[in-house]
Each structure stands twice: as C-alpha cells, then as structure tokens.
Image 1 (tube, one colour):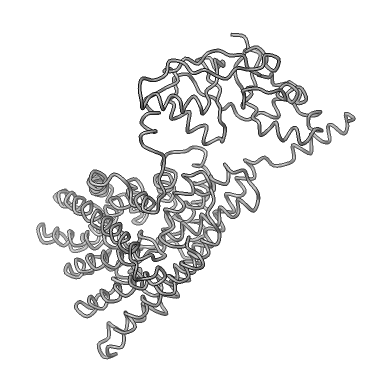
Image 2 (cartoon, rainbow, N blue to C red):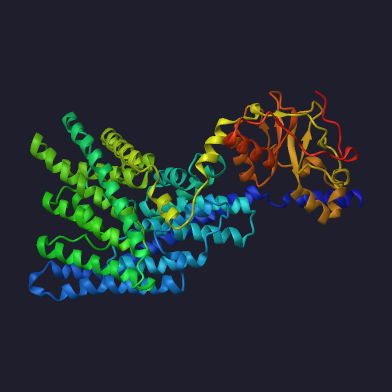
Length: 611
C-alpha cells in the first residue's frame, strides 16, 4: 500500500462516525419519534373516550335522557375487554398489562429487546380498552410503546447489543416525559424504576430524549401538564402538617390495599379454568361497568370507569364533596383491580393518582373543618395525596415529589409532599419490600438477580483474594496491529489484552471482539496500531467489591478484567470463574485465600510491564 493510499484510507476511516456519535443522533431521533407516538396515542384515546365512555357518562348526568345509558355502561367496557382479550390471546400476548414490567425485565435480563409488534398492539388495544371504559392508565402503555420504538430503531441501525440495551431507558424516559409533560420526573422515574441505579452511561441519553419528547408534546398539546392544576398551592398554615402526616400514613396503607388486591386477584384470574383466557378481560370490564353504574345512580359522579381525568381536575380545584371523593376512592380501587388483574392492556399510573387525589381531598375537607382553612386547601391535599399514593404504590419516592412539583410549576407544597410521600413509602416498603412491578414479574416467573448473590458479593472485595502475578500479553500503544494479531493467535488463557504506557500503566484494553474484526480485515493490520484497536481501560482496583466486578463484566460483555494497584499497574486478572468460586466459598464456608489462574503458554506471552 502506497503512502498516499494509506493516508487516504486513514482519513476516510476518521470520517466514519463513531458509535458514540451515532448513538447521540439516534437518541435525538428516539426522543422525537417517541414524543410524536405519545401524542398520537393520547389523541386516539381522547377520541375513543369522547366517542364512547364519556358520551355515556354525559347521558347519565341528564335524568331526562332515560336509563338506556345503563346498558351502554355495562356493554362498552365488557365488549372492549372481550376484543382486547381475544387479540392478546391470539395475536399480541406481549401487549397485556401496563408495559413497564416488560420494559424493566428486558433491561434487567440484558436482552435490550422489546418487540415492535407488542408496542403496536399496546397502542391499539390500550386505546380500545381505555376508550371503552376500562379503569386503566395511558402512561404505562406510553412507556411500553416508546421503549418498543427505541428498541426497533436500535435494531434497524444495527447498534451493538450494549447500546441497544441502553436505548430502552432512553425510550422509557421519552414516554414518561410525553405522558406527563414532566421531563425531570421522567428522568428520575427511569433511573429509579427501569434502570434501578444511577448509571452514568445511560443518564445523558435519558435526559436528551426526555427533553425532546416533552418539547414535542408541548408544541402540539400545549404547555399545560396532563393533570392541569387551576391554581398555585402552598403550605398556608403549619397546623396542617399533622394532617399531611396522617395523609401519608393513609396513602401508605391504601397503596398496600391496592397492591395486595391487584396481585391476589390476578392470581385468581390466572387459575380460572372454566373461563378461557380471552374472555377474562371481559369480566373485568363488566365489573367496572357495574360499579360505574352504581356510583352514577347513587351520586351522579363520574370517574369510576375510564381514565377519570375530568373528575380528577375537579378534585384538584377543590370542587368535589367529601362523600363523592371517598366513594370514588373505593370505587376506583375496585375497578382498577378488576380491569388490570383480569388481563387488561393498560397501566396503573393514572388510577393510582386518581385514588390518591380522592384520598387527599378527603383529608383536605377534614383540614377545612378542623382549622377553618379555605376550601381551596382541599386541592392542595389532593395534590399531595396523588404524590403519596404514587410513592407508596410505584415506590419511586423522588419521582413522586418531582412530578407534583412539575405539575404545579412551583415548590410551595415541597415540605408536605416530602413528608407525606416518604411516610407512605416507608410504610409500604416495610410491609412489602418488593415493588408492584417486581411482584407482577415474579408472578410471571421473571426474577431479578438473586439477593443472596448480591449480599455475598458485596461483602467480598478483591482484597479477600490473593491475585498472583502471572505472565500475560500486553502491548504498547504504537504496537502494529499485525504484531497484535500474531502474538494473540497462539492459545492463551487471556480474553482481555491490556495496552500500557512506557511506565506500565494501563491506558486501554483489546478484547477478542477487536481481534476477530482485525482477523476478518487483514488490510487493517497495515494501517492501524494497538491504540487504534483498544477500548477504554475496563479494569478494577484491588479494593473493589466482587459485586462491582461482576456488574462491570456483565455491563461490558466481557469475562475477564485486569486488576490494578494504586498506581494503575496490573497485578493480575479476575475472571467469571474466580468470582463464582469466591461466591460459593463465601456462602458455604470461609472465603478463598487464593484464586489460581489457568496455566499459560510461555511462548505466547510477554513479561509483565516493569514496576
């Protein structure tokens, strides 16, 4: 290869965008597409509700229209459940439920794949069921739809499996941001509930996608959030704080009632033998219709069926009597439990917020009676009740505060919010440590990493093991790729080959994946060197916990890591076998004192770097 051709080839390679650059562009596209999908989903549901269940409820409010609305109130949610049940049984079984557990499981099991067919099915069936009166929310399905779109786009542009997995929380954040018009809460919810920890590798993408999706939704639907608050609320009197504490306690207990009822009834529906699976959502729809008819006849109050957004807005303005709020609170628990547990396609976000608002409004009425505070404080209590119920049920305490702050566009209720939300969270977590989504997945046979393994690996560090110095292959940055390929072609125990500077400090690693690409493209061996091939220095220090070692191996898809001293020089290696050996010894007896690495062919290794 001539020098001119070599320079042209290197220049052409530099013009090719890196995966990081492609991922940034893809993240922005995901935020845009998911924002548009969320707006379309909300518009379709709004049209379906206006054409079906809302029209029936409006007829119920006018006694001169007769009682034909009763038949429609019973038939619509039943028919919607029947149609959705048949489609979920025979066409898109993955569209069942809220969708957030499916996204959480896909991210946790490293597959990073949410089927586009399931996302499309969720769009259609969610609109059918919610529009026909099922007591389900549109926010969870929006997350599922957005994650499915993000996953599909990742597969379309053929990003790496690790990057494709990272697109799931990006899509989820875009969905939450567009669903609530609350980008900050979308970021925290994704970190709290989907990712489970503060992962810097996905945080930037989550923020970008959430901001873009919220911008798209606001440009189409307006600046107001989904649950529009008619006025600004604040803590007007410190005497109300004990009642906010009481609201937190009540919300924690009520969230347990909702969760336990939903989980137990879901199991009962699953064990039904006389009712086919495709007909079970119709039972949930029929029960929802019956409860809605009872509430409408007795109190002329809407909200037990469907999303209940208009009734919720009345509660937030302090315009609902306390007896109606208590009745709707109980009715919504029943209808949500049956709608979801019977196998419906929809979420529990909105019903949870609805229940919390009714409970909070009732406490606000008590505050008004006891302290003669203005009646508008019922709206403030309703808002705090929404956050407290969300915190106790969904177990996302930071999100539960931020979502109310974004909805009110102010921090006036931050103190009662924090008190009530954390009180509800602590009570609910003490009684049932697992979140509602984890329990739902457990019923489906999906479990996350074993807690015994987690605790055992957290207690052990690499200091507990004597990692012996062994001869290993390493390269200087300017080593030619041909030399790299030649030296690694012999059998060796290594899967990771460090790149070190002249002082022996690690600056990067070369894995078998790069070596396979190099072997398939022999011309590259003439124009690249070890520095061009290497990845970031995936390595751990001797004081690192074995859990952190294990998680890094899983996150990067490698089976081996260099172990460094305080000066970043390599003292040995740790592999999956050593981690498993340490775990078995820790759970069955004392931790191991040594970890033997496989013997190596002395002709295929270089001496370790000096120092």
